[in-house]
Image (cartoon, rainbow, N blue to C red; front, side, top):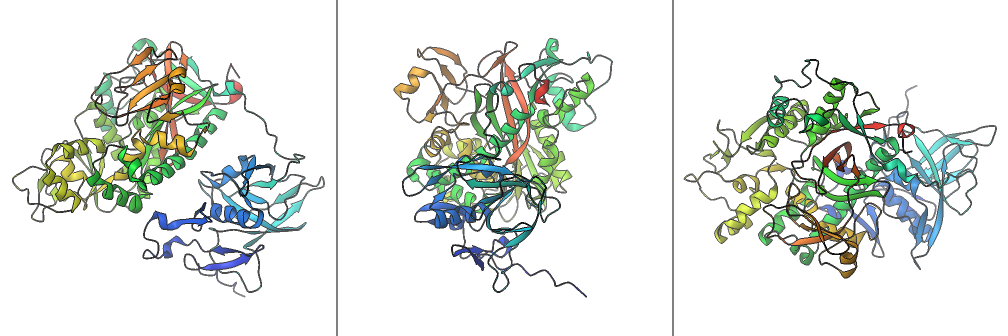
Length: 632
């Protein structure tokens, strides 16, 4: 007998069923979403009584909506569904009071109960995000739940739940729920209760586990073996800039490296994923408010284009880099470089080869997955035809571009490198072509968007009007300029134009407003307050690169650090002073890299001065077990 075929997914937004409490469950089959009804990201917002529930029709949206309608409380914003397992309270909407939450690991002797949250870990079927469902019925041999964004089929007649999962109860009363997907794992359940019997202990992590350690590799590395390949274009360009195969500028430091524990790595991973989601929310917030958007000092003629880029290409960011201070004082983010971030090759290739050459076997390479994660991001980018890499002649941009070219080609995408703007021209249709006459319609760039915008600012009002109207002008007599390529509506650029917003430091005060006292954020304001002046602060240009034009002031308002540069005429923000840890006479900054918005690897940058710049060294970073840390 043939088994019944699997039901076809219902169209996006279709009613699948109604669970206990008369809360509807909708299909989240995004492939069938009607773009006429859902033209932009804002249209996907789900709100009740002015309260944001989440995005239609994801699992977190349903869980929050069910709790609001059935219980009158909601859990706080989370970047991923599995993060719900870490929450300690919910907020009562009526009066803002908090009620305690307790988490119970799968197999716990306190069984789940109707109305509690069932949480899946990330991985497999629920890769990156994890999953959450509402438990509706509990039995000794099975459990029923209601959920969105799993099986988008209409429930059978008379059924009041989404799925039924098998349960095994052990002799000691442990309640084990079997996951129906072999590649996924149930973390456990979260109950609104103050009773912590059999719950996961609310143990505070030892702050010392976040301290980095400086170590030296055992090998001297001078056995004549070449540890970088001069025949490989990216590595050859890297060696040209560094003056040989090396990670740091001073040969006396060539064997030095840093280690960090697994606990700190997991927290950095969580911080990267959570902060990315927070920066995206802040971007959405800024783009909806002309007064806030004006703080970014971007030409108003570009505002519609930036908003359009956000609506159309929200999920097409390839990679970015967070810069952190990491120590027993906490993990604090300084900024997010979403546009033209660098140092990927050092993290994803060079530090691993350094470790192999110098015999460093402590733990594992902090950047070992970065390259494959970049490849996956490019595979999911939807790029068709040939992608042009646009780079300047800066030595760092040369090897950075060649490293990314390898990832792009490994993703199966045809790729060409453009050196500067030499050789670019116009075809008969007014489109930009490379020196071989190939039309440029997709670009990945090492140039910052701000460079093109600076050119636009310098042009006359006529150029701005042409850009506003998307009007193509015959420029056969004039060679293409950078903004002629990057700001043309028929050219798709990575990173997208909207990355101007989260990369601009004007986003930081908005984050402070949206997430006051968040543990990963530093208090940042558009104007210097007396309180910040009394505690110490950092003045930064809202648009800056390479650590230029940064001033550090202590609690006495004395200047304790300063860098010069080309951004001294830009508006500034003021950020709470939070010094980098000093280890072995070096100020140490940890950088994490994102690929498609999630953690992909980490590295360090160090400097004798308190401000990290493009000239600062990048020694290797290794991840070790917590027990191996001497200060643990």
